[in-house]
Amino acid sequence: MTTTQDIHAPDFLAGDEFSIPTFRLLRQDGTLFEGAEAPTLERDQALKIYRTMIATRVLDERMMAAQRQGRLSFYMQCTGEEAAVIGAAAALDDADMIMSQYREQGALVYRGFSYDEFMNQLFGNELDYGKGRQMPIHYGSRKLHYMTISSPLATQIPQAAGYAYGQKMAGDGHCTLCFFGEGAASEGDFHAALNMAAVHEVPVIFFCRNNGYAISTPSIEQFAADGVAPRAFGYRMHVIRVDGNDILAVLSATREARRIAVEQNQPVLIEAMTYRLAAHSSSDDPSGYRSKKEEEAWREKDPILRMQHWLVAQGWWNDDEEKSLQESLRREVLETMKRAEKRPPPPLDSLVTDVYADVTPALQRQLDRLKTHIRKHPDAYPKGARSLDPDVSAQDDAANEGGA
Ligand SMILES: Cc1ncc(C[n+]2csc(CCOP(=O)(O)OP(=O)(O)O)c2C)c(N)n1
Ligand SMILES: [Mg+2]
Image (cartoon, rainbow, N blue to C red; front, side, top):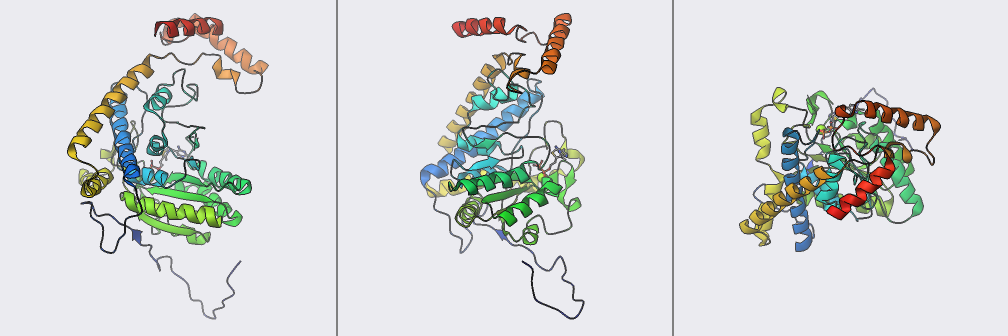
């Protein structure tokens, strides 16, 4: 469909003719803006959201410290973006699909992914669902409808459009929420995905975390337009910009987006304005590309404190509860980490056993060569590595279980 309206002079429209407002409900002190109405939120769900925010931050702090101690090879924090991520997850049905980028572990915590499950993936031990084949932070859970993370940026965006098309065909009333950063939105895949979703009218929520940076590149160097939100018009899509540090606004906007997606089979774009308070990853040092002053200004807008102030004003939370929650979570992370570190890696054969229905001769040859190499240089491999013989590994398992 194109417009039929004619003009008879070269009257250009300028790209900056409209700017998109930001939807906000909560002030930093936990009070509502004048005229703002909090979304319906029962005490139990409010506390679940808040506990999830704290559990995510504690996990991030501890695992970053573990990386610095050399216990973990790599880590990425969600710090500062908890309201955007967890507010979005809390607006969904638990059976809706979530497709993430890599900084959205809070959504997994909200769905019930345990610290044990996080640690098994981070340490790539025998209980890791990915069998130790991926870098740390590539979580996923079939049970929790959370697609496994993949590193190449933006690949999840067209996949989300396709998955939501399947949901529409199945007619089961579910949608897909796809998280991505404003940096990933610079990939061609973003545009292909939005166009495909709009043309095929699929129930997908594209949730952009605009945290101001793609590693060291500030968003001002990424696009000239007013953020990512205006792009929705080009695809004829519903869109809203929301204060990503305001949990009530994120929850309310995402609930409404879900309603549009599921009831009208229409895609929606949400741009959540937020800030990555920590480094991009454990391999990054932000002091090279942004000022302490800028970071401090955003620390003042901490999304967790904003929700805490609101909860306290409701009479649903107090300092003692805060202290005991923080302490028990810290203890739990440390205990879980010790358990996961001690577990052996997956058996070496698992590298090839479920790639195809049967192990191909070429893969078998590679595995045999690898084993010969490891036998020749045993000192170059971790002491805790499994026996190279799967039968002996099975015996080890039985012995370990007996001794545990
Ligand atoms: C296709 C591709 N190009 C480059 C990279 C390297 N890379 C990893 S994260 C990242 C920045 C992404 O920024 P953004 O989408 O804004 O997410 P944020 O890290 O800010 O949450 C880049 C360039 C990659 N993983 N994949
Ligand atoms: Mg970013």
